[in-house]
Image (tube, rainbow, N blue to C red; front, side, top):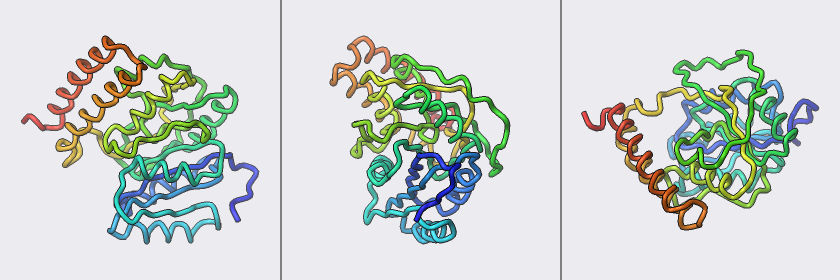
Length: 269
């Protein structure tokens, strides 16, 4: 049996979990603190082998029966596969993604779902903020500034952190499980360039608890992230979603940003 509260919204939350036993509590607290809670949470353990799965079972047992569902892989398959698995298992018409080391504003589900259902939106996302502390934000916000975006904007900036995205479960596109870096960015661009309506809000309704480019060990992954991003542009071009000029322009802009990130992270020091 699941939660039977009339305040719950028809949203499934999907969280890929890989060696996250130290952060998953914070993520889950931010879900429990929602003014309108999602109907179900799917925790997908990606073969962590560090006690994460046991932690997920504990969390499942400590909440109402059926609200948290745990699924695990026997081998590491990457975040795209974990999200696809949760997507497949989801029972609700809308899906919201949350990374295990991120958290949400207490009104995130309420605000975003209201926009999605009121505007027949296929996908929406919003701004995020960096919050080094574990504090969960309860700041007020109006959430009234979601706007449809031109897909071409995504060629020069990935507006959507994964923890900001809510989408309809029934869309036919999925994460590319063979792509380990920028696989989320690839899906967002494919959705946008397929002609489906996507929206964005500047409201900061999600929080990252580490700086994206100043984390120890991240500099070694920046090149992989860049190559993944360049692959997104190539795939869009091959699918005739963007022109050769758009692809080359995106390449140049992306490489310039990569060099800046590499300097910030200390890769070139």
